[in-house]
Image (cartoon, rainbow, N blue to C red; front, side):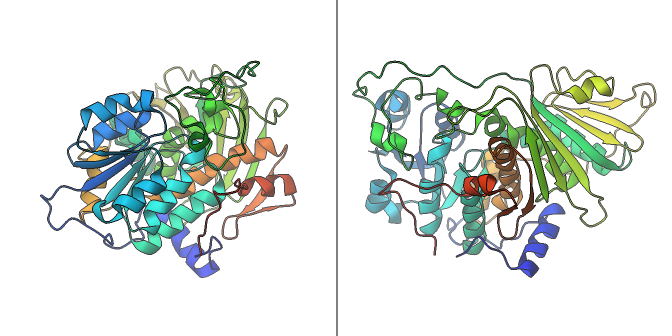
Length: 433
């Protein structure tokens, strides 16, 4: 298997994914009937993992894997008949033939390894955003899921919200004309956590070596785990990785975006270890089908990006602004607004064209049984996750680059290229051939 797509295949994937088509066939392994329960293993069952576990709890939960007994304790009590593991590798060794599908909800730096192991063993996969810790990992998982025709879903749960669907339908109906510019943001200053000064012993309930996974060894500190890992580059992807897939899902879906061809970013001085408290990026997408080229701006910015003030728009309660030839549209997870309001005061919402979701988790379990693909399966969500991570790459590399998605090449920026695929510590190397 390779991450370097042949040009003909790449063009086909970009065109179909941008148009909203699914590229796979029926899943390779499905339950024998629509009524048969799936045997599901869940890797990472504390925090967000506990919520994902609840989402699939109507199936047979046959295995639970977590490195933290304390965080996982509630899940262990809820499913006393599920077999318990610390190490996903031992879980697969012991139970591979008893598992139909896998849910992975670990910290970002440990998404890839268990997800790859699941796909290599022909297991359907539900994976938390932002899919992986670097662009290469995202591409490997996307390619392998397609090759094996497995049912996948990325944890972009807000995809089913009515306001998101309305925004997509308004843009597709041409309510604000032709859109060539879009601004999306997370209103946040989280990042640059305090550097630990003390390193207490590893708690008895935590398997620290397994928690570190493929990253370089470092001393345990509660500054990293159980939550603030998100704001350390070795483990997390900052607020861009945390929120980017949720928010950029709106323009990706509405505009049929796939892979950018140019990525630029700026912000405060780069900290080698910690993610920033603000960031501004610009991603250029080429024309596709009947859609012209689009410039997508992504920001981490308290109070929203400067573009809102420049356009005289209040972004309070929203996270995305589409700028069209005939108006603007504000979108968020609670509502949508057409601007200028006076122009659109009598506008009638177009008839709904998007099928309603039976539920985000049900989409995936139905796909595992041979039904329609889930809405955030990897051929759609993989390019989106790569784009989110590319914004981080441009910021960390101190400048932009032309991007060749077919070969995963950042032109004329060796610092950026070095971040596309990261090294693993000894014992965590992978074989994707």
